[in-house]
Amino acid sequence: MAALLGASACRHPGPVGLAEPLPVVGAELALRPLGVLAIDTRRLGVDGLSGLHVGPDLTLTAVADRGSWVQARLVLSPEGAPLDLEAPRSGPLRDLVGTPLPRGFLGDAESLAALPDGSWLVGFERLHRIWRYRRLDGRAEAVAAPAGLALAPGNGSLEAMGVLPDGRWLIITEDQRPPGAPSMRQGWVGAPGRWHDFAYRPQPGHNPSDLCPLPDGGALVLERHFSPLDGFSARILRLPPIPAAPEHAEGSVVALLEPPLPSDNWEGISAFRHNGRDLVAVISDDNGMFFQRSLLMVLAWADQSAG
Image (tube, rainbow, N blue to C red):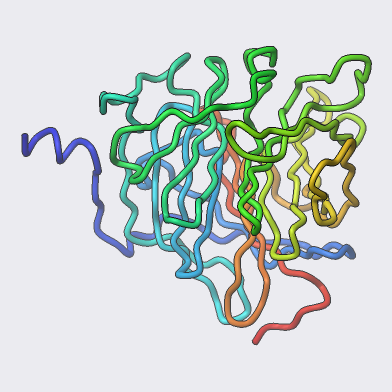
């Protein structure tokens, strides 16, 4: 039993110098980068990072598409620039009876959202589903996802999910197209048993890869771009407050994550507050490839100064 408990949540001493700050160049948009960290995923204990959440106490939580979770303390400067990650702990995500998920088809966790009671929602693709975890190191509980999610492409579904301040869940799929709208993406807002579907319009050449709620009832949507010639880049778009029954949703660009900024496969976004300032963090998925990096960027709104 002791061996099993030890395997379920590996703790590492900190601080351990898990991340290296990289130079950034400011962009003249509403969200401006404060700094970027290159994360040593071997020391973190998890790679393939996807969904992201940063709490008020600067606890960073992420899930990985290899069926695992990780938490660490994000160290920021007084101005909000990321300096390091400390005291990481990680372990496998578990199924409905508590068995660790295998890598691959069953363990492809892509999105993460925090519920008001402290529990977590994790969105999986390939076998599309939403599971609730009262503790990330505990067993999962099934929740009723939108019925139409079953029609999503195997590798293009639950990338973007969040819980709005009024308690509604917001979901935007990566690559599921509503009938008759090939340029749009399928979305839902509501909760189990009372879903409302809507169409989301991404930027040309981009796909939603995550979202996070904002205090005003709107959301930030992270949209990713990749091509063999251009490599990886992304944009952050701001959605206005989400009405009760939207038909369409479209955001305005508030940040460009592209060269000369360090860039990679941006897959997670979280909004949080620190030192009197509203900040945004994004994280990239290295896909377990030696030529990619796990990056963590922190951005701030241009119209807010540090407290």
